Length: 436
Image 1: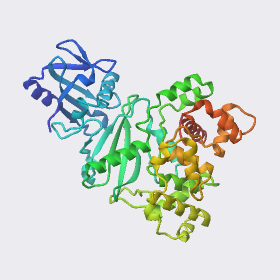
Image 2 (image 1 turned 120 degrees about the vertical axis):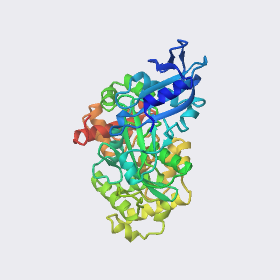
Image 3 (image 1 turned 90 degrees about the vertical axis):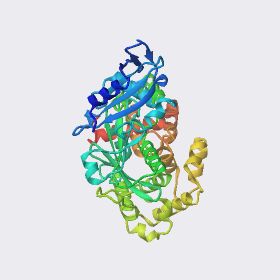
Image 4 (image 1 turned 180 degrees about the horizontal axis):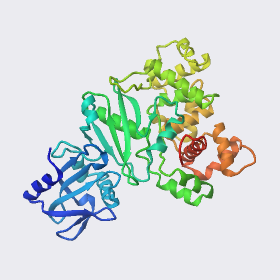
């Protein structure tokens, strides 16, 4: 395989003789013309990616570029944890371009590798041995912390669906097949997420788009929190809390049905018991990818329609909860309720749509809107744990009631749900699950 120095020599022989470097603001500095060029004005003629043999932080990218003044040259950067901030800023801006360079970044380089936001073959030794699928590098923007986001998603270490050991792993349903994926973060304060498909096989473009979209939704990778951080700066009660967990993004279940079953399982039970019920539900009715990673994908609504309530009772659900799950499965499978419906209407109307489904009360509806639909304007005001955390945050002498919580969280609109996730992490830190 071609080395970095060999690729530079080859490109110089082809006329790419200028050295380009990134400026602090994320433009590209041309050593020939002396100008600083915005990413959207750069034409990328070729991309070459170099994999670290034993350390992913040794990965590098070489770009053959033409600046707006017609100078031809090369730009190279290592993008592991020690990547220079200026280089990472430039690459982030470049990957977000809607035309020009973004089109080139979606193509293949000389070694068949891909750059940002586009799939590439996974050439690690483990991937080769297991015949794994492709991978993609995503730029969620700073700040981002995968560990905090995963903990906000999984809530307890006994959660077998969302696995974490410094790398996040989960099984997803893509089309009609389950697929195991993993996500790693590197890049230091300039975060990069590498999403790898662990299950062997051939994947269509639409399947890869589905995998990437589900993971981005799960991990809040496309959610901008700039205005939320601005709110925290002027809200004295929020500043310290938000600073402790800066980088967490709002997690979201991949499907509406999974959010509904989560809500039902946790109704009037401890989180530990609720998550164990979800583990059993997934193990019994979920689908297993054809690989050796031992993950199980959460079942879809259609597959649950045919089961008998007694099967759910055998897992530990009450008869009433079993009926609630089947009612939710019917509503989703028949299209009586959809995520797009709940996203497009206002908060009150969305709550009413969920309340119309048997077994979903006010707490469940708000839980689903926040965790399943991504409605960050929703704070589950009937959540007992949240009430206690609000009491501590606001230094109250007693837990507030629902009306008081609604009044106290009103100034946080439309980010009250984001505060909920921060309070959750605060509780996890106090319990010793995470380090803040």
